[in-house]
Length: 278
Image 1: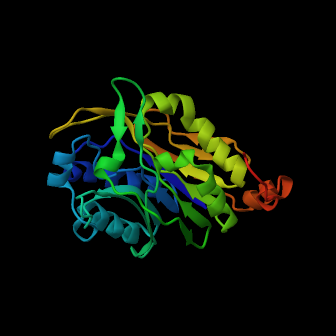
Image 2 (image 1 turned 30 degrees about the vertical axis):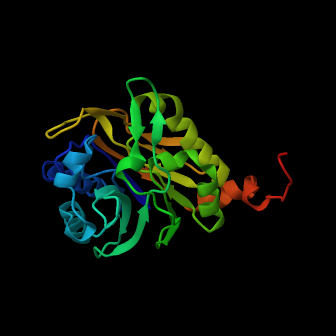
């Protein structure tokens, strides 16, 4: 199977973002990708909850989702929309950060809501409170496809190794980590964490990312993201790196490499009960 990771620099206007996204998905398909993946918040990168309330839609009305389902069917590809920011019926008015797996007929095969919220103070000038605007998910998701069993995750989930181990032990041999990583934490932690999850699980890791400086047409401040979409083999090797500009990276995914890595280091079968710490 050939995977195509789409790296984007979307702004805060979903309608304006959509043509570039569709164009990149088509480009990945032209380059032979059977499975195309887009980053976290493919439809809208915004720091303003007020602006998000004005431009976001519920799942059933989201134009990006509808257009990309049509595109997957037209191209005959599997497509992971890394995530979309969507309105929900949450009583506090919070949004969902939701990943979608779409099959070659355009049908939705899996949904995953990001479990871990990015509530951090990286510096005095860079603070995030994702849980103020987004409700966390509570369900891990494993999706079966003809080419792999896929464990779906999103961005900050990456720091919670137990989620990935649970997915791998449930049968995942491919883990998706669409992201909009901050530049500071990205430079320090993005690649090491992705390689660690790959090594711990003996699984392929596909991590399409947002990059660059994101345009602000509405309220809120501009945001920057790290880029460097990565494909990591089950042995922890970086197979492809998207750099820091929008584009597409292509990689061959060999499912047999999962079995070989787990045969050489069968750590998923070596769990032991223990006491403590005290």
